Length: 475
Image (cartoon, rainbow, N blue to C red):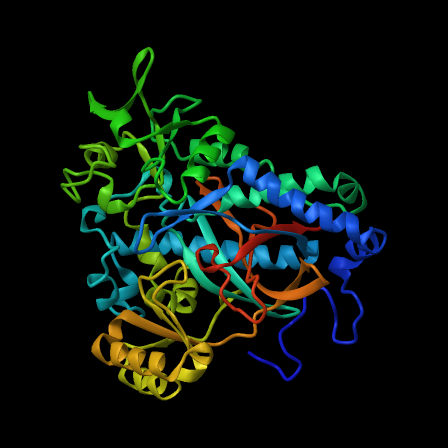
């Protein structure tokens, strides 16, 4: 996807002119004093520090808490671009939900030979305990994050699907709040679609997924592993913003066939549990018996239809990067339509011919673990040393099923604020989709992650990336 001219610049055309999306912003920026902008840059950092917007990085030593770097130059998408993009996102999410239902019921896609059975039989995220069970409202993927990269004016590609527990939405909301606090006059000049109503929309969407017999205003709770989890800030933030209870496993117990939480007035039943605890820790009686993060017996209550768990257990299959490589077939199989959003070209190393190609072209490719996330366990061929390449070839030969490979894409760039002015850096985008029996609700924009280091393609915050506010113009 590389071009002779280099990566697609989202703000400037090749002749240096400003693209439509950034025209109003550029006019505003030209009127600002550079010293004032530098002060604003430091103000944003202190705001995030005061608010406590941090995440934990787990390494060899104890967990280290870091500030998420924030860049104050927005990433801007026109309303027309967004409407086109939204159609592709919705189509993909509808297909993912239908795929989940099929995989735990008749498995028509496998019977028809469109998907190899080994892909889920050997998949640790596939839960036999979910076979034959349909979640309340038929929804498996209540909250989905679709990671997108841009390679041209009309070219958005899906990099990966996050259907298990997509994170980062609190940063999307805080980024917007920070920008509106720092530059209120800018938002009177440029009409931007709001994102601040996401918590209310999340509450509404989850409430619509409550089990049969739940009250008109169901009781919602967010299940967190606790304060030492890397995303605890987000768990607490979302519970507070959507008016739900924040609970840990020790706050819950099964009483009279219902999951109930401890309150000052005694135990109270929960109708919908937005869990941020992985499947294996959800119920020690059904999954990992050593788990202290979940609730003994919750899975039986779930199978009896007396609680909604969002996202449904077993949805992690859709996050698998080998499954991802079949998404064009999956979309067409369940929607009867050609995919509106393309995948990145992907070589499945489990295939001998693909493995041969990957090993021969390793210096050109990005290789990822099938179950990997967060930028860990991957190789960026063009940036790797000869020693790293040789070590990775040995890994591939030993366990080819564990890996997929993709070309090194020329990700689009957006400007960031630096000491010497604006400078282009590579970005990706994670839009958030809420799914209920009423349909899909896509938040305009999402989380833009940015590789702050010049030339870097790694946008993950755990690997030195930052975030910026994502604007969809109200046009």
